[in-house]
Length: 181
Image (spheres, helix red, strand yellow):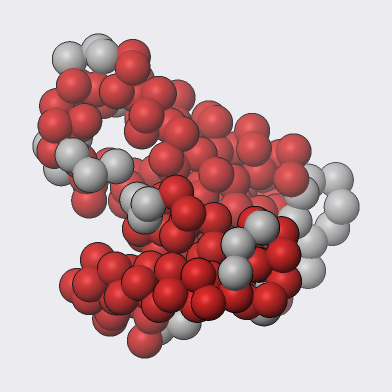
């Protein structure tokens, strides 16, 4: 999502295509964020979707992407805590206290935002470089990637080197996030 100010402006005007793009970018991250609290994939999906619906309903209140993201993460966190408090399974009070803590929230938020930023950077690579980086992130070695993609190991090495160079340049302004992980 490169044009954050424009997409937010379009969403404020009721542009459903812009909201779909925003939704597609944030929904998986919010699901993962919620799952850190709930440890239940279905409830996490519901919670993320509810937060995005609330965002749509309040879309005119947001002037910048930072405010929109903060709203989404706080809504998801609060909904998760409420679900845990109302759950029929007794939640250990010390666990609940930890989940309600600002430090847990911040760590979880930084993890998910970092993942989203890196994922977007990888998605913006040329297709072959993107494939190679994704396979590399799954733990495959260059010869295995070469075999899977039916290219030479040297081509994999060169493409990976070029991809990492582009990623380094793209992510240079976000290096501080990695320090927190």
